[in-house]
Image (cartoon, rainbow, N blue to C red; front, side, top):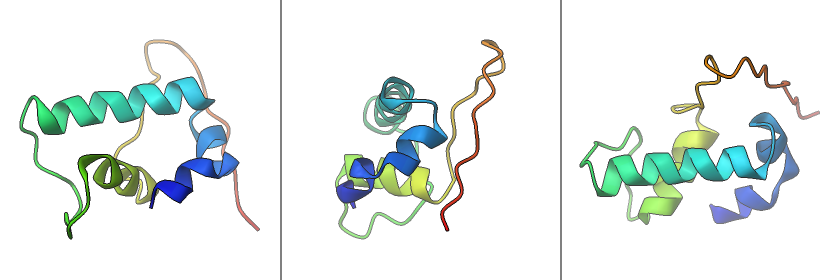
Amino acid sequence: MIEALKNDDIVKKFGGRFKLTALIQRRLKELVVDGARPLVDREGRTDLELVVEEILQDKIAPDFSETGYIPTVVKSI
């Protein structure tokens, strides 16, 4: 699961490692501190693995509306 973070496609999808890390941190806070419900089945996953799976399934995404940033779409062949 965490192997997905080594793939550059997921990093490019969010405009860089910093933006991806910020998204992961924000979602982890929602799950751990705020008590938000997971958007995918836990299936014995750690909180970090759960967040990565939510990202891979496009259940969560960053909101760039305030910054004006338009992420580029990376397609795998």
